[in-house]
Length: 125
Image (cartoon, rainbow, N blue to C red; front, side, top):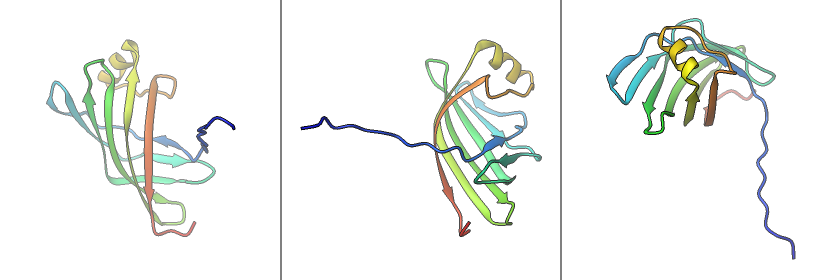
């Protein structure tokens, strides 16, 4: 009898670039970021522009990581609209957190995320 096993398949869909406006600081644990104009996604499966409304809700957790609640709309290259939501966790080094707080852009090496995205669209593509 073989032991039960679990496997997870992943597939690269896209790179996401979402410039953020300065946050709305609700309190010491919650910040809300509007996605500024100029955001985009590029990849073998999805290409397009991030359109309003789009935003990130970051809740600081006791360990210093962030709980994410992200919602955005993408206008794909075929003009379809894709609604994307994801929750998860994000961690930044102290240096990356300082740079982000001063308004500097962060790269993929600065941000460590674990997310679970959902995509909704009427597009057949």
